[in-house]
Image (cartoon, rainbow, N blue to C red; front, side, top):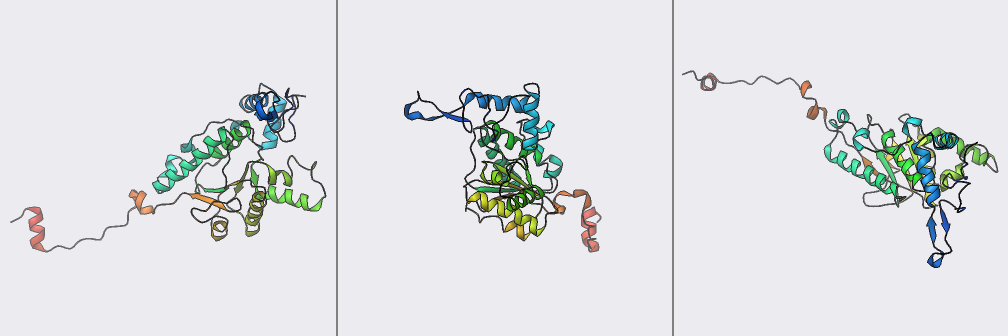
Length: 280
């Protein structure tokens, strides 16, 4: 059996510093300040970058974070989330803003910084959102943040049902409902077929995480008044409501040049026709 994670997945049981959540108290530092554990940080980086380091550990990470093997890297390119064939149908200003916010989150994740509010992304119907979600999760994990698996509505509902039926849910799944409320980073996917009840499941989770001052990152493939009710007003930032960053579609006539409406014939007087053709 390979090296084992601690329960929070951030520290390792063989850590020479016996760190907690990736930090330990250094008695030789002024004021006994918390110091980042370089051993566990480097090991987290190794785990997500190579299967050869520790096969058991790598498999555990993929199972607990629900990361497909091909998506355990940290590379990020906004153009792979909103590819060229899709961008031509979108308003350029909205694309610029969405890409800017994606990059900001990804860059902050490298150093373990989290937003001080919840965020919702509406990438549109032909986006490849995994190319944003997985680098965000993996980079946050490497930086020492506690990360939940990618949450879907059925999975959240399952964990909440277990939590409400049993006095303890510690051994019933790879993660508990209490975990997803308390961990630093939680990314939630709202699928296109989400029901009224399912959307409320996500809203409830965001509200419960807000009580712990933890942001929720939502990527939605559904739209409508109920989704918009989960978002905050412009300029207002909160944990229990999500700041929305959304692409906007342009009218088809603006990009489908090969599908123009037929042009009505223009009538001319004989004098105007003769002037145009040079006939005297």
